Structures are given as C-alpha cells and as structure tokens.
Length: 257
Image (cartoon, rainbow, N blue to C red; front, top):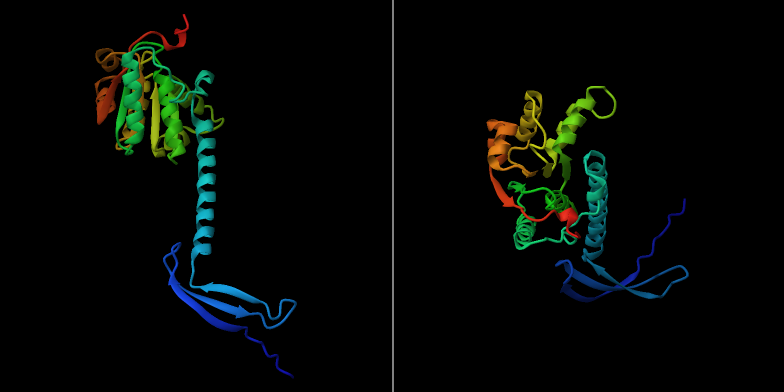
C-alpha cells in the first residue's frame, strides 16, 4: 500500500517578541502554503500568542455572568414581595423633600459604594419618606454588581409563610433557604402590625439565619415602639452591626401637594 506523504509548509522565523496583549513570548513565522488552491501563498503566524484564547475565555465568562444575572433577576422577581408602585424605584429617581432626606440618600449611596456584605442598615422615620423606595433601589444597584438580593415586606412575608402550610407552591423551607442565602435582604415595614408569639419566632429564624450577612430594615417606629413590637431578642438582633439612618420629612408620595 502506497504511503501518503504530507508536505510541510516552508517556514521562516521573522521575529521574536513579548506580546503586549497576553504577555507571552511569540515567534512570528512566515509560512508558505504548499498545496491546494492557495498553494504558494504566504501567511504570517504568531506562535505562542494566547490573545485569542484569552478573548474566547473572556467571552465565555461574560456569557456566564449574563446568565447568572438573568437567573438572579428571575429569582428576585419570583420571591420578592414588592408593591407595584416600587417596581420603577431607583436611586436616581428618589427626590428628597428636605435636607435630612438628602443626607439619608447620600448615606445610602455611600453604603452601596462601600458594600462589604456584612453591614446592616435600619431606615427609620415617618410614613411616606421613601424608605421602601430607596431600599428597593439599593437591591437594584447591588444586583447590577452581581449580588443576589431579595426585598420582602415583613407583613407580607409572614402571610406568605402561612400560605405555604396549604402545600401549594413553594414550601416554607424553600422560602427560608432563599432568604438565608442571598447577599442582601431587605425586610420592609418591620413592626408594622401587632406581632404574635408565632410571628416573633419566625422573625427570629430569619434574623438568626441572616447573622453575618447584610440586611436592610425599614420601620415607621421609634426604638422603644419597635422593641415593644418585635420583642427584646429580635430587636437586639436587628441592631447588631447596624447603622441607623433617620428619614423624617413630608410624605414623599404626596409631595406634589
């Protein structure tokens, strides 16, 4: 049987250098195609350059980042309990009605810039000053950075937990595991309604699971009222590693009047 001989292209080393893109040592070589429709044509090859490999790896990394971001948004939309009027809330469209609220906005902007995954915030103040608005806005900013976030109205959360007892939809364990794992949790309106022993027990489970992770709380109550409403043990957990931001002013929702 006649053996097949493979022709190697003629090659000539042109230059050797360090690639600025990948930092690898490159041997630039001129090759002459031996056969086929392009026979005799000369081409330049950079042996040792990793730029194309790095480009492909970065593209794959970006695709994974985009998929993860899309998945986080799906989880956020599925689990978060947000009123319709907060869907469009952003830091940019929060318009403080006085200097105190302007300072509060700046403190929240600083919190985002310095976010370390451990620090908590308690936004306290009168009704309608934008506590929920600005809390939703924080979750959006941090999700842009690849963080996993949830926004939960505490009264709605407690109702949601009760609904899991029926066996339809997600289970209580699934919900609590999701709350435990996210990078940032917003617990909106804590102390908004009378807390039973059961409600305070569930709140403690949430707070205990979140120990060492970032949580933002909002409340319309002062410290004495909040302590009385959620009990001393829960209040102590809420205040652990937590900065308080006071948001007092005219009703944000009625500022046009």
